[in-house]
Amino acid sequence: MANDIYIHNGPLIIGAGLAGLSVALNAAPQPTLVLAPVELGAACSSAWAQGGIAAALSPQDSPEAHAQDTLIAGAGINDPAATHALTGMGPDVVRRLNAIGAPFDHHADGSFVLNREAAHGLARVARVGGDLAGKKILEAVVATAKAAPHIDIWEGAVATGLIRSDAQTVIGAVVERGGRPIEVFAPVVVLASGGSGGLFAVTTNPANLRGEGMAMAALAGAEIADPEFVQFHPTAINIGADPAPLATEALRGEGATLITKYGHRFAFDDHPDGELAPRDIVARAVHRANTTLGGAYLDCREAIGEHFPHEFPTVFSSCMAAGIDPRTTPIPVAPAAHYHMGGIRTDIDGQTSLTNLFAVGECASTGVHGANRLASNSLLEAAAFGERVGRKAAEVAARGGFAPDTDGALRPLPAPRLTPEALKTLRTAMQAHAAVIRDETGLKTLLETITGLEAAFKGALPLVAARLIAQCALQRRESRGSHYRQDYPATATEGQRTFVRLTEGGLIQRQTQKEVA
Image 1 (tube, rainbow, N blue to C red):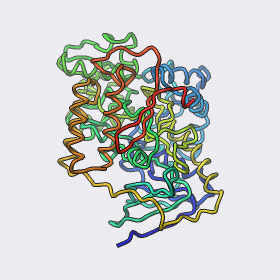
Image 2 (tube, helix red, strand yellow; image 1 turned 135 degrees about the vertical axis):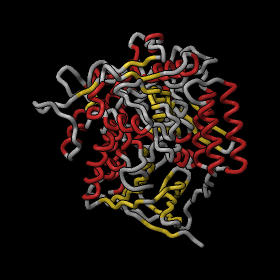
Image 3 (spheres, rainbow, N blue to C red; image 1 turned 90 degrees about the vertical axis):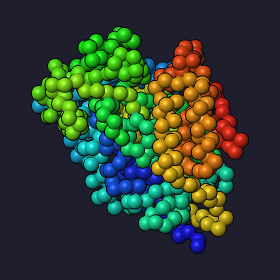
């Protein structure tokens, strides 16, 4: 039986987190269709973000200072133009979110309450209800999107592949909705599908986020950038939960310390900034404490104490549910897959290497985060570049004349789904061999596991995403930012980004920064 066909004469947005909905709001007045895999506001990383949104909002701060901190954290491979564009937009983006109802914390004089987080030179993270930033910001954006007359939202709709008119031009997507495949044709397609944390056995992300947007783009021929760079948050609450609850970095910004069970503040062994060093450094320190020092703990007793329920209600609730009272007991912590700096290569307006295909948010890679994302820049990127991509998508859609050849379209091959057993095998192997510490032997073992799974599930989107990460991690023979090779611990003198395309013969790589300047 032939698939149903739906022709939409406006932007098609795959994903309904902060990035996707920001695109939709800024695509007005073009009719915009948003695909939400689950109920709006649920099971997306935006809603789970705790720390806040970084922006130069104080008189002592500036977008330039914010950019410099971002570039330093990125370990030498950020795209400087993208970085400055992001931090330059920051203050106005936060004010616009505040204006539509995001309930940021304010002082009595109306100024924003700002926290300091790791690798920031000063306090610049605007917070909401202590640790409710992502949830409350997204609630305001969801309400605005639901009220917008130009936006149509399909909940329970999952894209499984991209449709093209030729090798270079995207004209739609195959979508599963209500148990049936629908071919949705549109003049512009925007991937806002989130990250890849669910590929790892220990993650702070919704487990359904497995890099599938990146995989769909790669299978359609799009260029992928920096897939080996996966950030591991240093302080997931180590209670064996899947996903792992997050203990926000704002706790350390407020003075919480990392200790061993003997009380030693081990983070200073690796960096003079201790708990506020860049995330990759702190993550490796926590990993080492868990493997060689008897365990890592976040001690909030003195810094937060009795204020915990009010100041950090999400973390407090997670701890108490696990039988840990953080007012009196240090919290066991471990690194967990948290954010993917790599993804579909785009410019700052979201344009990919394929015509009419855009990407935004965590599934995209503008180069703004380099090898290691600066804390709380993720919500900023989603909202700021969401605005830019929305305007560009509206411009493309407004050109009119969209009349797809539905008979001659190039449709993707059906993507098989991994069984629960196969997915567990993949996640276990990714955690063992592509997490905080990597080496050649482990990465080759991981690739053998992926190859074995491909024999039964060829083309499964999580396997495509995992191969991109693992293969590029193997090919990068240095340590930089979140990518640490214990067999190549030194950092190369000149930082280069990774750019690859997926072909039947494997990955075609180019790694020269100047080629894409």
